[in-house]
Length: 257
Image 1 (cartoon, rainbow, N blue to C red):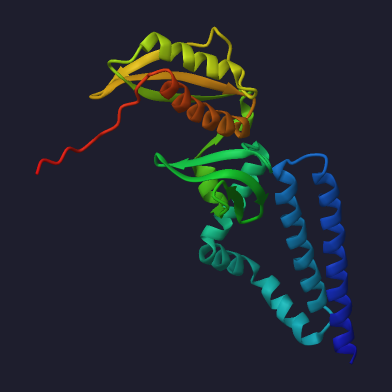
Image 2 (cartoon, rainbow, N blue to C red; image 1 turned 45 degrees about the vertical axis):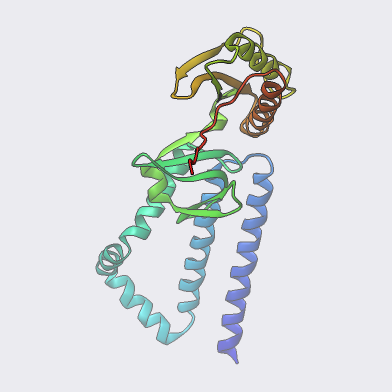
């Protein structure tokens, strides 16, 4: 009975301490979304668990002797554990590096690129000892190991004051290019979310087999505004061009029978 009581006390102490740590870090997270808070919380919780387990082992003769043997051969155990958990330790070390350098914080929008390929893009939701959780725009959560995050190129749109996104549309060679440019500029300027003015350039950027590409940059305060503004502008361009006799060419197939 004494055996079970001691175990129950130590488990209760561990739960209470972890709960207090979670409350403290939750309160601190309300003031800042810095990733080092999330990572530090995981480290503190793990440290508490290790101390509680070791302290519990010291309460009984059998486990006390085992713990002494483990401590006496600590260097060998560390060497074996390091070899067996290289990837896990790499994630922890990378997590420390990321927490110190802070290339991104919780609730920031980032794009993770490795080898020229985008492996994750979305909003950072959590940073643990092992991985970073990114909530992607399609509703999926991407769990990326910290070692991968540390070795990848991170594009953080929150570091820029304004967001610029290209919008381009193709018109036929027979269409009035000047009129198309004027319509595009007006639509961009009049949209409630854009920062565009009459000075923003709208250009005929390229020729294609079917016509001319008319292109501009839509400027907004943030990425969310950019998605919405660019979508609205593309829809408005199709309607305005159709109403003003500006043709948007598309491929057709003629079948002779």
